[in-house]
Amino acid sequence: MNPKVSVIIPAYNCARYIAEAIDSVLAQTYRDFEIIVVDDGSTDGTGEVVHRYADRVRYIRQDNRGPSGAKNTGIQVARGEFISTLDGDDLWLPHRLEKLVPLLDRQLELGFVYGDCYRIDETPDRIQPRTAFEIHGGARRGWVLEELVMVNFVPSQSVLIRRCALDAVGLFDESYRIGEDWDLWLRLAARYPVDFVPEVVAMRRQHAQNITNNSDVTMMRNAVSILNNLRRREPEAVGRIRHAHTRALARAHFLLGVAYVNKGEGRRGRAEIARSLRYTPTHLPALGWWLLSWFGTGALKGLRHVKRRFQRPNAPTPQCPNVSL
Image (cartoon, rainbow, N blue to C red; front, side, top):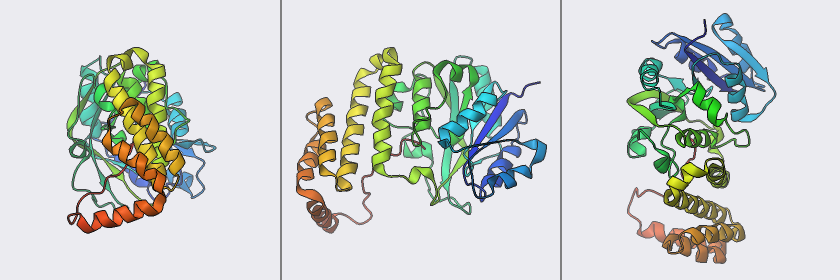
């Protein structure tokens, strides 16, 4: 008999954390699941740790294909009606499946459901007082594409997906090593409503080796690509939220331009900011950054020095948003 839920754990050099991740799944109060660990070419002994679990875990090893490739390998052999992924260094709380499975079971129209999460460090101690829902101004339910194009408010550690919905929209896009989750949530939200449980069900670990510690340039370049691909793949759904999609694309080009300027690549920065201004020509911050890009990093550092002198203590510094929680 097939399990109700297939839990896919993609792992790359996670020997230090993988046992905690597996144990957090085995500790679930809801018991009808299988665990599939996909070792994405680890070289640190991840496989040896997983083998200690014997027949409680299905282990697959492959050459390195990135997070999307590892998740897709697991999904392709999964037997469950519902699919959930857990990165090899993250954790679930014991009631996660107990809360999410009935919600997806009761509402057959839903493509996926999700819950809240917070960040931990290596120990694992909580390192951020606010949860993901609090950071993003709450969760959303129903047809959420219009909000989701602006910000990825769905914590990937907390998502439970209906398998037939995943089959309809396709698997994770293996061309992305950052933002692959957001890309899939967008494609699902273009065709299905979603729902959530208003409580913390997972923990995201932050450490020096996290792949999402990559540069703002990579992050925002992927965001631009994801939004353009969404328009190509789901033209009818994007047409219904055209203004929101345009704002999101303008913002992504602007933040990519800012990332280039901060990196000292003014010419590339100007080109991206100019693309942003084609969508929103009256966006004053974009105009300001476009002018600033002509003066190089020296002028930028000087401006920041002046700003720091007059800025109130503990004032937040604007940063590029992460496209994958």
